[in-house]
Amino acid sequence: MLNNPIWTDASLAPRLRDDPPETRTLEVRDILAFLRRRRARILACALAGAALGALYALTAAPVYTARAQLVIDSKMPPLFAEPGGDVARAIDTGQIANQIAILRSEKVARMVIDKLGLRGDLEFGGAPPRLPAWLTAAQERLTARLTARLAVLMDEARGAFRGVTGPGDGETPDRALEAERRLLDTFAARLDVRRAGLAYALDISFSARDPQKAADIVNAVVEQFLREKREARIEASRFATDWLNERVDRFRAQMNAAIRAVQEFRASHNYRIRRGRRDDPDGPAGSAGAQITGGQQAAARAPADDEPGTLEELESAAETSRKVYESLLVVLAEAVQRQSAPVADSRVITAATRPLFRSNPGLRLTMPAGAAAGAGLFVMAGLAGLLLDGRARSRRQIRAATGRDCLGWIPRRRGARRRGLGAEARLCAGLADGLQWTRLSLAAAGHAAPLRTIGLTAAGRTCGRTKALAAVELARLYAASGSRALVIDADAADPVLRARPAEEGIGAALCGRPGKAAESWRSCVTALAEGCDVLPLAPETLPSPHWLGSPAMEALLASLCDTYDVVIVDLPPVGRSAAILALAPLLDGVVLMTEWGRTPLRTLTEACETLENARARILGTVTTEVDRTALDA
Image: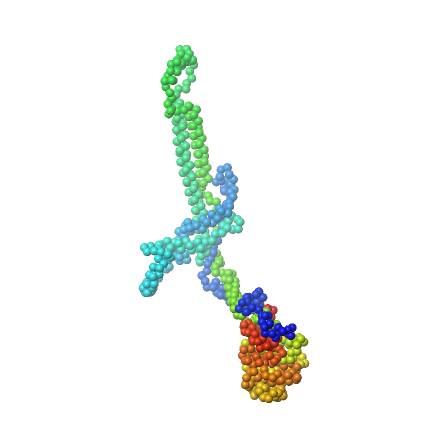
């Protein structure tokens, strides 16, 4: 794979890289890796939030909630049931909603406020206690001064918003109405009425700072609610009774008039039956003789229009009026018996008592809420930092930014500081373990193309001393496997051997006659361990960094490869010196080192582009100071 032209052709390698880091988003595995990596800090923030919640619960003003419960009866007593109907009645959701609306109404609230005298209570927006005279005078003077200074601004603002956001000219706000409105709003906000599941029961609760006051208000609400329903029933009964009394009086008058008409008709007509005789003009004989005379009189006198009807008609009308009147009397008696009694269709099943524990703020609420808020804020801030950070924190990100595989991860040693190890000792302890995989990867790559000269460089200036120590540890690993390894110290900023002067380097020999450096390098070699040596290059002694890409340097590398199996070159970081651009193309491959969480992905991409433009062969990347929880990301 390393012999593929894609590693050496600068026009092909950038195609492997992903989009720029600024266009990427977080994935689920990035979030999970962050949670695993920062679990200790998240727990600490959660504990801190819980402590703040507990502190708030202990110092804030306590609020107590009293509760009562009443039930709406679906059955009426038989004495007050509808005539001819069932004592059981169906209650739908609308009727229960009506009861809840009555409980929350301002009429019931005003009745409770008037009964308990809550208008002057400070908790419900009452008047504050009177201040001393001297403090009141000082407050008035200060207010007057501030008013005088802001008068112009207030006039301008009043002129701009007159008639839009407040009262216009000539309109004065009603302070009493505003106080009443605030009192009712506060009362409604603290009152809660809910239906208890699917039952015909209502849960009524009220919150106040005084537990006894909360219980008294809930009981007063229930009492005034029942009183309101009784008064409404009594008022309806009074209206129905008045209407029935009016109807009864009307039909009584009609009945009396009908009976009086019957009596008058009977009194004005003679309905006695007599036996017939010849000499009796009223008998059959006399009637025959007087037929002509009666017929003439009947023809001469016609009945008037206002003359009453027959006796049967008058008696029927009187009987009908009497029956209607009696039925109205029965209905009136039943209505008075059924509705005039103060019986409501609701009753209290649980009266409110003084609550023993406060409901808000409570430790059971504030502590979990504080813990969730603390952990959530830390997680959100951390994820926002990851999204905006753009630094190398996972294999996937480094592979997307460079287009190369990760050859090794050097984990961070957390316990080395507690064991009393120094900075370099802690680095070496992590390098020895992390570079094992790097050496094996380079050995596998050497089967396809021999790797005799390997360069180590860094993207940016974040790695520091780690790069030089990594070169030494990698050479020791090669030496431990039976190979002779040499480290060329080409980084003047962070040399491998800090105590050695620059005059002892081989750099001065590169400027002499051709082949001088290839013949005199043995005198500059320093042994580090068995099979592992160091050769200072001292690039600062060269007149120009371009000498590192001269034929003399090629001859030096060829001579070193004849003596050593592996030559590892400690190159300066990309972008710090032009020496890497001259020396990297002469090597078989370059390993790019990054530091986890510190090297920006954009810097990493630019370093790869710089090496590709210099025709250097990039073998892969090695990341140092890696958090162990990020190894799975």
